Length: 166
Image (cartoon, rainbow, N blue to C red; front, side, top):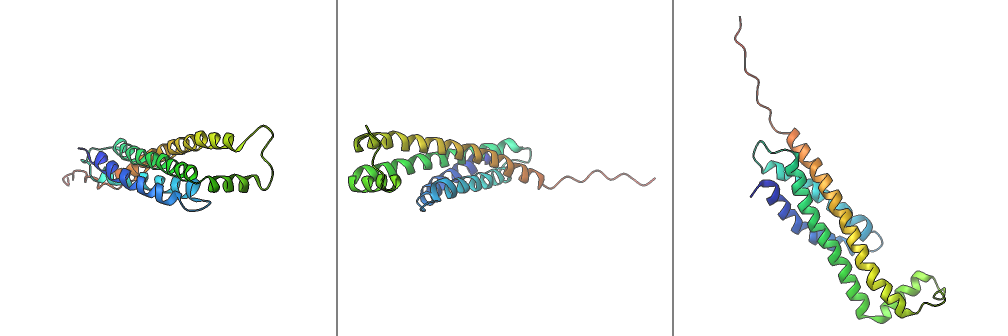
């Protein structure tokens, strides 16, 4: 198994846990802390993936490691939204309180019932998690390539041959 794949798999597990855990931070967790964690872990996975690879490995190994770590962040994002959906559906009073707080005391629009809102949320939250997970995956792969590039640049360069003095 290549160093990039090993690093990616390790950081994929870390990404799942980090994205789920940080997404529970109120207000900024899902849209700020989770993506920042996936980007940082993707870059670190790319860097370590190059360090663990053979000396001829290029930036592609870093992008592979970042992409695999990004898949972990994608899974974490989807799992987080599924957990939130389960919590909202298990407690109808919590769901109604959430909808009322978002509407700021305004009545539901004409023709919409609370059941319609439940259906919308049941469809919308997983779609939101899927789209956010794709963004996590994309940025983790891109920053994995950046981390790989940094690792390639830091490799010790061979000394040029010495020419005899004439």
